[in-house]
Image (cartoon, rainbow, N blue to C red):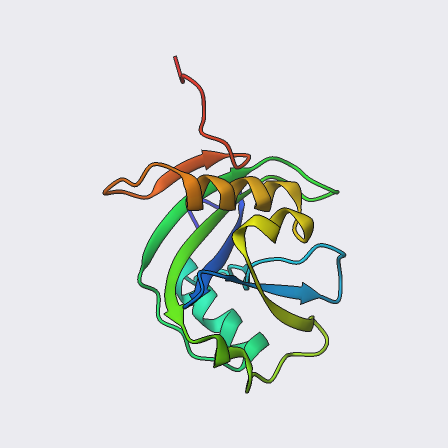
Length: 157
């Protein structure tokens, strides 16, 4: 392959799913203390949008539709992981009862929770809290938001 010796970057795809009360779906994970948005690492030759749909199908036994891209967030190295690019997709709104009949992949998920935006920082990693704050409180534009370490980047000059 032409790109065999070029650097590679880990890609993550996550979904922003809301209920009618404006709460955000968070996953309580088995492998880390912080809760997180549903999603996961993009497989080779898989698109980020296909990844978030697949991960939610595998881990929650649910079908979702990607409505659009909310943000692209470059993440610096963290806890032994190399840097990564996170794609956050809008999965729309569902009734709060969406979670009632989910079958969770027990090796990865302990539970799922609807969380009010004000309570999100109590449950997630700091970079996730910052990203969601930017997304939920940020200026609405006709295009997706670009973030670096969950913050708007400074001047590139």
